[in-house]
Image 1 (cartoon, rainbow, N blue to C red):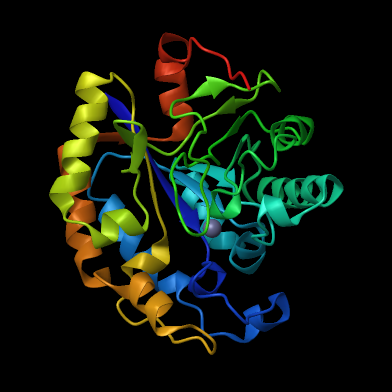
Image 2 (image 1 turned 120 degrees about the horizontal axis):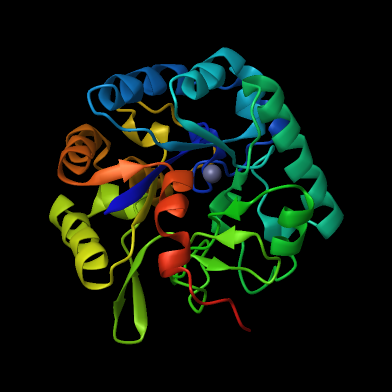
Length: 286
Ligand SMILES: [Zn+2]
């Protein structure tokens, strides 16, 4: 089964745990990691016949237009991660719309192709933002991959949908990050810090269960900065947040190679084409 491999293209100083005390005005003054880690990442991806979805922050596309253009020219899908990495929960509906449009225009100017996908920073589409899907549709997006239906200290929508579905703003589709169901609890297995911190076998077994038993494609994500082995420290980061953000970074390269070898991956758009009307038979109801 084809699964979706997605990469949120942002700097370490955009990550929630590492961005404390850092303002938008500080971003250009901080030492960048993205050019180096993207080079490492692309060398790895080039070894496999795989195309992935990059959810690119608009601000990043403005800094590195040639990099983003080349990703698109290599056949990868470019989607939006917003412009300023603001959580939807912190924005008014009007401000959210403006951020969506600014990111979409910036990315489309950069690659010369329509941008149809969106991922909310910190998976901040949840029960507090029921209006977000309507605004995404109004801003011209066709799908969102912004829901992570888990309990988490920073994000998540524990009662949110687990599998792709038509939203009330149809034809907008939501493509949630993958989880495993254990009793009444959904366990995270769609990448990010859980992939980096837990043994590889956990993710591999979860993907097998989802593909073979639940007959569902996996939606998996990580960040380029998680491959860095020398992240610069940022001023106000607590020890625990620094540790959680940097632990096992040296293992990411090997784990990602295992993932790429063992399972079949494509873009979110590829997965939607493959399975949308086979597995997306239900609509969201509140
Ligand atoms: Zn992000």
